[in-house]
Image (cartoon, rainbow, N blue to C red; front, top):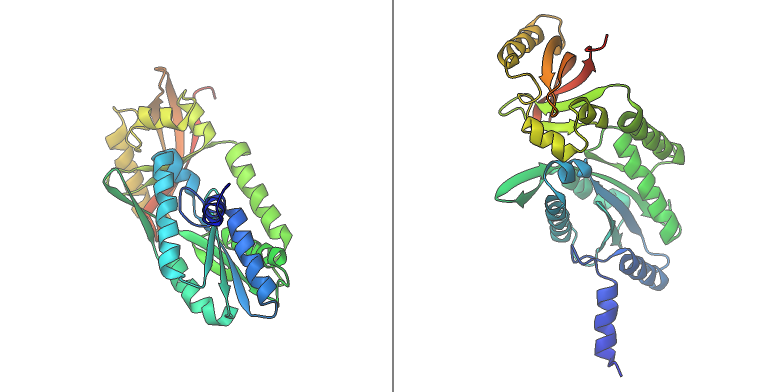
Length: 307
């Protein structure tokens, strides 16, 4: 028969997320419910967190890199929110924290400081950075049960996403389920249905590609992001036909320096697809300053070959 120590060890394994060592969803729920059963009138704060643009980490580097980011996030949370905080991983890139015996006003400065921190992880000898979004709610004022508390925190998290990510918000009565519906619709519309090839890349250094939607991948006769990255070398230089790159770069720089340009440019050039096809492209871009990546270009590529 299994001893009590054996049963305890098995229960701990069942409640632990293997990748991060934090509570999994089951373990987190059990620990929070146990606390609330014991202290039903205590003040507490529920927090929801996720990594901004986590899919980009997986797509650009690999799922192993994504795992490294998740472990890094778990370590950062454990170092910042110590006992008696209860910390769990909901799944994917989403984490949850229960802070007992405190009010929202008391923890707000800590949450704002933590959300403003640029997180980082190491993969294959290189350091990579990322940001996070956080939403939180107060028990029992905004959520009188475990489930209601984290529904409110989740709504606040997605309100942060609607406002551009990389931040923290408390739950308020103005935040509703419609906020999350609007976010879901917006992302789906952009990723799946936008009628054009979208490219985002760094404006400095090697001009690293940060994002490419499905239509852009297909524009280059590729079927996967990995295939597209390999074909282009993961840089804007690899997008443009080799014979035209220097002229294109010069044209872009001249346009964005003109008074009143507001960082906008438009340029035509050829691309060479993976299958050897040459296509004529209209490139409409905008230079934007960001806190995480510095200067980046948002670009819409239009295939003019068949016009």
